[in-house]
Image (cartoon, rainbow, N blue to C red; front, side, top):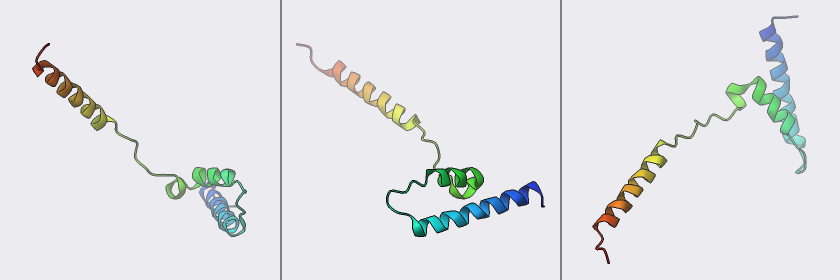
Length: 80
């Protein structure tokens, strides 16, 4: 039979073969969501997006600097 890892690898290889075949046969209205989900789950190192999480630190620092700049300008403006 094989070890759990060998069975998983064979299953994942079969999923990839199905994916390649579907690409060749796919019509514009076919939905590949289930296949994509299975590939992501079984070969995440290859198929999951690897974009790092967005760091909002720079955005919040810039917003704070803009606020300080606006206050500084308001304080320097002559009062009417």
